[in-house]
Length: 284
Image 1 (cartoon, helix red, strand yellow):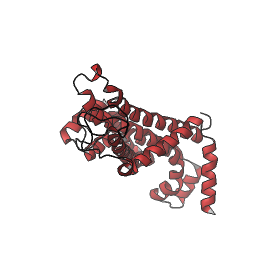
Image 2 (image 1 turned 180 degrees about the vertical axis):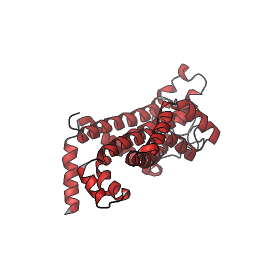
Image 3 (image 1 turned 90 degrees about the horizontal axis):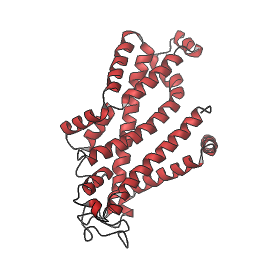
Image 4 (image 1 turned 90 degrees about the vertical axis):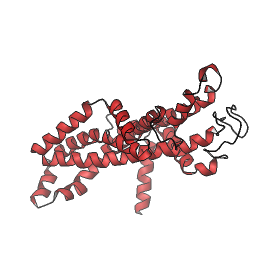
């Protein structure tokens, strides 16, 4: 019975989504399927030469090969794993950290709130990209290090949003009553605050996934990503580092396909974010 109610509720909400949002959700599901089943849907390995170098799309290599003869479709399929993994981990960790810090700041108030907000203001005012590049260079090329660097610069906006919501919620009559009867901060957060904060956190989480995917691709493109992973940014790094790439036809598949993979994923996430916002606030 409960599962039927949940299913009906999800179906009702999906009906309110725009055509772009529904199509974007379908695209995201395709990306997830490709990432999960990459070894089974890739005819050739992504890290072993399987054909002559730089052959154009066609036949079994329907996206062509790179300068080493690696199948481009296999690289893009495995690259989806990297992008979705980094995007999801960065988003989850940033939302958790930002929620905890923002809740403490908004609920406790006083000097703790001022101290945390000054730290948040400093973090937001600092140009992110130069410091991300600097930290990524210092920590070394690793997927874990990339996640750590991205989380450092991604939790602040979540903290600010959560703080503002908690400051409003803690003055509500039902929260004041619960506090009068001895409800702890953890109980209030779990029972009363979380359900009110969830829509805002969901929107912010999707945005952070998109931001993290772009940031990882940028770092890999600059040569700061994990060289053992075939991320989309690393594919573009090798392609654009190839001598005379734009004086040949190689760019038509070697550059275009990974660029399309990144662009389509980010655009789909943007449409999904917009529809979630409309569901949470019909006035939009």
